[in-house]
Length: 268
Image (tube, rainbow, N blue to C red):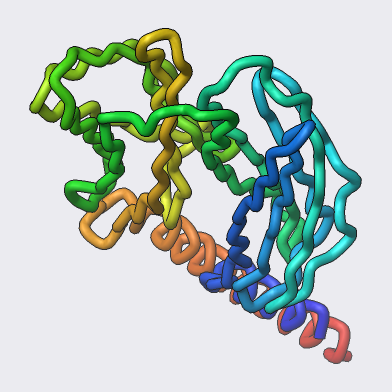
C-alpha cells in the first residue's frame, strides 16, 4: 500500500499544474490643495484572493508606505490614502505606486502603477509617450515611442518601471526628440534568475523641463510573452516525464522484491 501511495505522490508531482494567477489593477485619484493627497485604488480582478497587499507610494523623492491589507477577495477593492507636501513651483511630477502581494499559493508578486500630478498652471507637454509590443516570442521587448508635435527640440529622461524581479538596461536614459519627429526607444525586459514568461506590467515615465517648468508624462502596457514556439519550454515536461519513468521503474523493482520476499516467507 505504501508503494502505491508513493507512486501517486510522484504522479501528482510530475503532472503539470496550471494555477490561475490572481490579477490586480491599480488607479490613483489625486486632489491638489494645500498638500497633494493621493488615493490608491486597487481592485482584485482575478479568480483567487490575494494576501498581504502592501502598497508603496513615491512622489518627488518622498516615500509613503500605508498599512497593508491582510486580504483582498475576488472582485473587491481596497483604497489607501497618503499625503505629500505640495511643490513650491508649478509643474508636473509622477506619482509611482508599487503594490506587493501574495497569491493564494504564497507566491510574491508586485504591480507597478504610475500617473502624473499637475500643480499650478503648468503647460501641457508637446510630446506624446506611447508603449507598444511589436511582436511576441521568447525575447520580449516593449518600444517606447516619443512623438514631438512642437517646434523645439525636447530633451528629457525616460525611466522604465517594472515589477520586482524584472529589469531593463538601462533603466533610465537621456533622450532628445527633434521637432515634428518620433523617437523609438526599445526596452528589453529581463527577469532576475529566469526567463520572462506570462504577462508583465510595464510602465514608462518621461520627465523634461521646458522654459523652466517641470513636465512629465506616463504610459503603461502589459507585455505578453508567448512561449508556444520556444523549444526550451518543453524541457520541464521532459524532465517530469523522465522522472515519472524512473519512478515507475523503481516501483516495478520494489514490487518484484516484495513478491520474492512473500514467496520466501510463505515457503516451508
